[in-house]
Length: 369
Image (cartoon, rainbow, N blue to C red; front, top):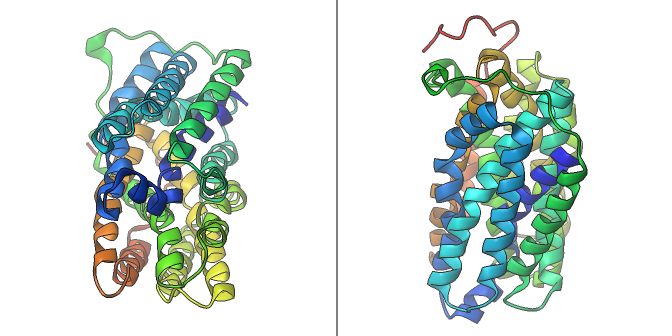
């Protein structure tokens, strides 16, 4: 429950604004491209602080850093409720990104320290993915501009309570500042690419699938939200499965092919049954590479496991940071966002060629830098 609280809070904030993008645009009097900055603002700090938060977790302990992250998310989200100004809300999302960075990296390390298996990492990732899917499905039911921020504050506060009840992680070996290892390691780059194309691009798609199905497909927002939620929610089933496929790179490659096919089908925007099937395909396929990427990073760098996960997740977060507003811009084209989805499908497909086998690759901390 402690690790799940951290995963759920980070995952929920990824898509809580995108779930009601059109409503936020009308309420604030802004365009969808500016609404994309609400997510970009979150990921500016979320991406930038992945490695620092990982180093803090390696030094101070994952549970303490995670609790601080939950408190920051709750405070920033609650503050955003007080003033309906776009620049202020974006600023609070930037602050919330500090908290989500602490939550996600420390949660992965807490799970490793308490349980340790790749399947456990998959379950951790599944919780984060389910949170994003639930945000897409549930946030539109709260008919207010406050919905994304109020729900985020409630989720973070509940998570803080759960983490307070969770057991402490085993104490890390204390280090002096000069002994903290670097994570500049080229062996982590293929894992970062895998995580970016699965988690990163699925979040980009998750933020815009509801507007796509609403605008280009003509579906009501509530219906589009439920259909689009499958893009993120179904990772709850496939991420634990990915933990059992760490040593089977051929199947991981196949997951990228399947995910790309689903995203390309979503670009059609109709009919609804096909869109539900495409969303489900993306959600299931995109969840598989999560555990191999994180467990692989922890294997490669046992001397700095949290910082290694932070590096891998930083690249994915940067993908979301850049990709979310760019796909949003394609909604201003005659394609109504379809072009953006097709480009994302091509990027996802290309990642199948960089999947590596990480069996027995822990090696020494110094090799491959």
